Length: 632
Image (cartoon, rainbow, N blue to C red; front, top):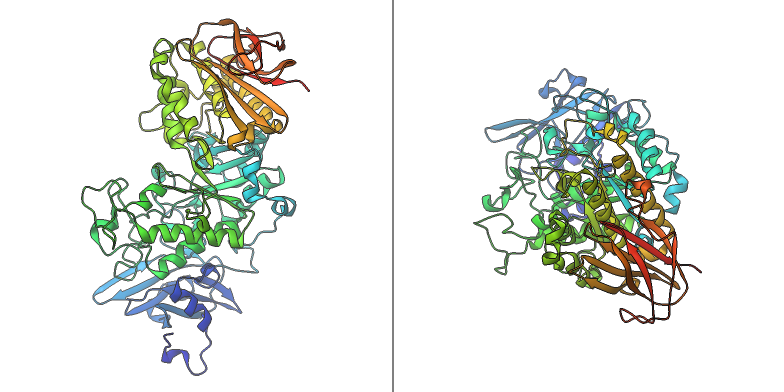
């Protein structure tokens, strides 16, 4: 281990030899407890990683922004540290870093808060002051002690995805704060029956139009909605209402804002040296060099940080596919050491992150947004997987939306898009996402992508969401889709809540509420194992698809009529005789439908059909989905 002469004598030290050893090995998993600024004993300790710097100084409110007043001491493993007497929580500071002729003022990579609106400063962490950005008294112990993490594989998981800045506005272009939104959001999510919310990235970002995906400061929640303890209040409120919180996390790339990580110590420290690997052509961002121990410390610690300090229940990891492949969106690329296209160091980092998360927080969940057929995304690392608990089913989402955009008269020619997903539905632990990505960049809203007139759009969207809840996999729906937001999502505008004055839109939201209620009550719908699903029948020419969901001795028939033509006395095979109750009918007038149905229940008959010993004759309303359950 490297030792510095400056660490001898009477000078107090902050980074211990053990800290420096683990940092050098890339295994200082809670580096946020030592790197950054930490108030102690009438002042503050500062520590930063800048191995190639010739000189690092601290300038801030405590020294009139004079870098000459506080030059830092070089320690081991490329770190620098200094104790500044009189530094107080809430004061601003930066690092001035010199490397040869290069000099730059940088924000602290481990800062817990950045200065609004010009993000060039950060607040010092305090442990006893009210200005301490991470000081908060939690009231969610019951929730935290009841989290099941991997146990959710056998539980209902229904996620409401939200962009905080555009969910609802107080007035024109004035977003709710973290505290303002807490109760209204909890009310809405609880009323609709979702189990979790997923928040688009909250880490500080300079460009609002990136929705948080171009991160400038990984340990600082964005100032736009309030202080760190305000975000803690939001999460605490949701937890007390029985709602889990998932946060989008972005280790795939980082923003190139000059005050941030880019060329941090005058060299390519956080990013790749290789220009072909360094720059992300799709997003204009830089890519982490996952092979460096300091970068591993930074990212793994950041994943733990949100779970630890903010009590989040899970991380949805963005753009995993871009991490897995060196040739992702690149005509020119550098192969790995074996000549292949896989980014081996990124794969190792992903595995290490998941292993570390579950070792520290066994009640957490991790979700991969991964759009390729990479094997074992949601398998444990000991089984040669990446170690995520869930993977977004992007194939299902693309296929089913492509199918639903077709006019019903043409759907029979595209029936395979509706059925293909069942061939791989159990190859991973899937989340079925209708996310923010599907309602931007000219795609239109889910409502606008449904064919037909207004009534048919509503019916098609009810049908689409009914199929989502019937299909194996956990559920995710982006805000606004629950009531049929007519327009494409715009991050600068609030959702169009006024459309709820229209009975069709209000009915759609009641449909989502009842879908969630049935989903949470009926274990057959969240038995996402192979034995929890079975084919009943498909009739492409008639536009009918029928499948069964199972759990223990309970069975639920899901019947879809994907055309506007009612199917009268349509025979469906069932596993046994008895009365089959119509649990949900998307064509009910309560939801804005025509009211066609089966008078609440139908009786089975000993007539074999669809390779089943019994059958029922039902009415399939136009553009509808029925959920039929055997009465016991």
